Amino acid sequence: MKVAIRVKPGSSRNHIGGIYQTSDTTPPALIVSTTTPAIAGRANAAVLKLLAKALRVRSADITQISGHTSRNKLLEIPDSCADSWSALLSPAKTI
Image 1 (cartoon, helix red, strand yellow):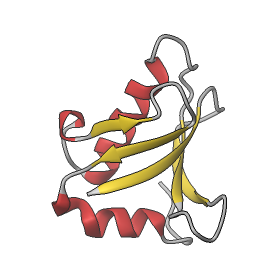
Image 2: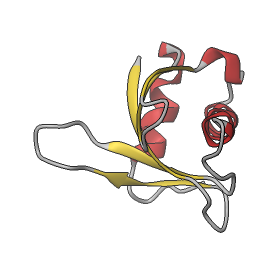
Image 3: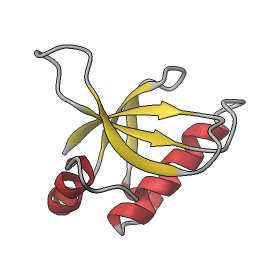
């Protein structure tokens, strides 16, 4: 299952929650904040680890498809995580 996220590196805390949407035609992206700075891909690794913990899968089960140097990223997550992903996208749910 392909999903979109918006990364905020160098944040004051690790946090998953919030919706980022640029237009009505694009799918909503989940906002993922990490304390790790965006240096040499360290923020990407931290985000994958944070998402894996929230989705209760191994970080190796999450594949980054695009956005390696961008805040907007496209990821491939296991289809079995669809319910967990929907829960993360709900406005009332934050982790």
